[in-house]
Length: 180
Image 1: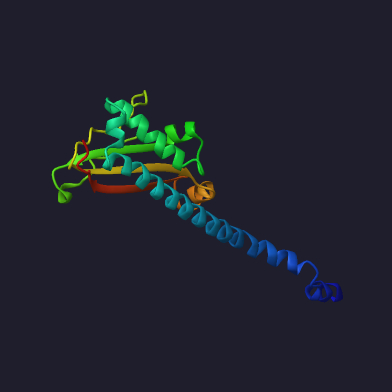
Image 2: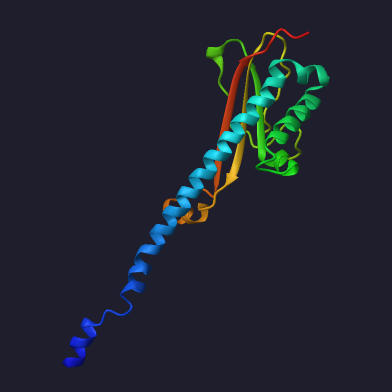
């Protein structure tokens, strides 16, 4: 009976038990905060890169420097990937960043047709993203998508069925300038 009382009053190891109960949610919360910060940083860099590359189309620099649509896509991707080098290497950018450039009759008619999973210059059986010729004074929209691997995706997959990839998207809608 005395041993049982001393065992119940013994508080050695309580800190370890409390830490074992508190540590997993705390670490998950900490990783979630880091994940959110990295996602916001990636989205900001993607927005800036999309604006910079879309400006080349809007001002006619891509169209004047390249005669075919494939060459224009390569010039656009080169500019885009050079702006994204903070996040990705050039080869990773070409494989993981999808560019959709379409023209529309008016601003109210801007609607992207669907989800594409490969660029027009990539080989494969996927759904290629359209990249069209933009003429002067044409309303156009550029959508750039990047599937970013998640830090806590494997945890989220088991807890909430969340994918291990986070799809980030940046859209720029503009009317091209009256270039020659």
